[in-house]
Length: 107
Image 1: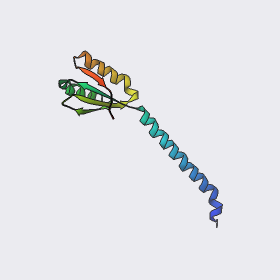
Image 2: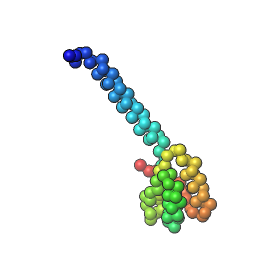
Image 3: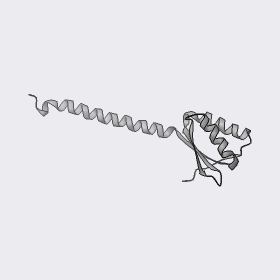
Image 4: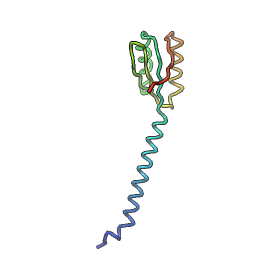
């Protein structure tokens, strides 16, 4: 029969593995947090539905939220991997006559 002291080395390895796993988890969260982008725009109210429909047609490209429908304040949240796609859609909106102006995010 082995005593607890005989397993001490195994226990230390397990603790180290858990600590390493926790570090990998934290790095993963930080990587995802750095990749998330949020941009706010003022858009003419008539264009809100059209812009939302276009963005949603690109499934999982980003999240469209109306912050203040009266003033036309919207927010786009997306992965930085899709920055070029989002900018292309914004440019297309301008080409379609949708008035769109980026505003600073107020916290």
